[in-house]
Length: 584
Ligand code: DGT
Ligand code: CA
Ligand code: CA
Ligand code: ZN
Image 1 (cartoon, rainbow, N blue to C red):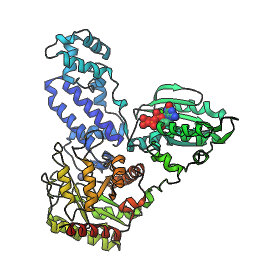
Image 2 (tube, rainbow, N blue to C red; image 1 turned 135 degrees about the vertical axis):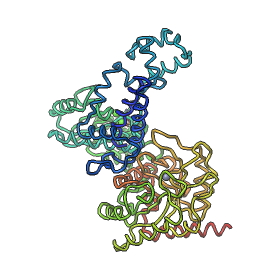
Image 3 (spheres, helix red, strand yellow; image 1 turned 30 degrees about the vertical axis):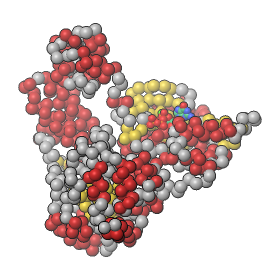
Image 4 (cartoon, helix red, strand yellow; image 1 turned 60 degrees about the vertical axis):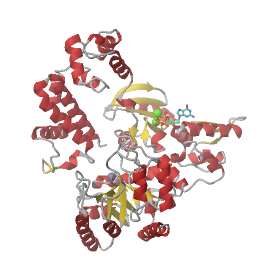
């Protein structure tokens, strides 16, 4: 999610809750701010993209007065109304209202009926039975609130990879101004590109005598709020604006490889590696690889050296989870993982024709100047997606003409026609077969009935000869919605059997299917495609998240269809058609 959006949404949420706390006469204000918070939270792009010539391009249900607050925030980084309102509620209120079971209404009663205004006072009153005496507070409710209050919140949550990448990039940028730093890189789960990240680990190489100065500089950055730990070679701090813990570790240049290997992990990978080292008469730590008998340093300057000394091929960070990669490396069988440069096109994007923000021409211009793609598929929504501006068959035919026009102007077939067609509740599709047959690429996705088991629905879609791929197959949305119930093993089997591709949706909110399912898919011989589900030009870079999932799934470029030129994609479609008609 975009940091401005997130911050604004948080403030609006808080304003809404303060109005709620203030009572019934502020009810409409409260609703308006809560609404605005939700709308901004759901925006697929940076809110600043919605402003042009000092105006909102679209209002999105946001009224004039809230619009002014948005401008105020973008210009001054604060909202004066919010500063004033905060003085009207107890100090801990804003953090407390986010605790499960403690809405503004409840807090109001604690405050007015029992005169409780801090977290400590509330905990005490929950424990000593005072709250039990309030009407409507039975034992179970009290216990739930108590355990929610005692549990750490918010910062305990793991951070989606995209956010972690943005944050770490900006921190690395800040630190690069420190002249004593020789090398700086990310480590930990972030370097392994896990889909969520617990904390951010950074590694620095510098001369021993410069460490103190670097650490002092780091911990006194404006952004740093809390210092958890500070030592000779490390510091652990809390970054205010990112609400995240960041660990730095400083080593000397000759220890770089050993330290990078050690702090990249994973823990399980490292433990296995250490066992292997001991078997071979070595010991390994963050300073290097040493012989046990003479304590002689064998390797440590770079990671390759460490792995090679242990008789292993160097293992890409994304594979380091101790799930068989060390055994593979011992046999020299580490696959050549796909890279972003292998990608020849994007298989899932939306234009202004449905709920995207760019016209076909704008997309063509942007892709031509920013990507080395051979093709990009427009997969706008089908008619039952009313809110998302889904299109009927006639509109798709019109869009087809527009695509031809733009391609002609470009002088090449960059833009491919397609759709993300809805799989309806009964498993049939939202567009006619004759239209689907005309399009270059058909992704079929589920956008409704999330609570039912959707296995059969998806399987039925796989059996349609014109469905090329299943979009965001589990339907999960990171941090807000679990996937619908679905038997993914069966779906993968049917995908393999029918020659239907399975999508790795790289959108930062989705990352669907994830690395584990993608690995399972290729084990079963399923072809994967990566799409970004872009709704604006900023989204095309989600391709790197899709590639991250594929790398963590041990995919080579041969596993991913959109590393091929378009002719191979046509062949893939033909194979599916033949297969379906042969079995009928
Ligand atoms: P996270 O932050 O929960 O997403 O996961 P990681 O993998 O980034 O874990 P973190 O930040 O606790 O530690 C970073 C790396 O440091 C970890 O991947 C491996 C290494 N490490 C940490 N603790 C240990 C340990 O007790 N033994 C070994 N061998 N390595 C460790
Ligand atoms: Ca970490
Ligand atoms: Ca850490
Ligand atoms: Zn979709």
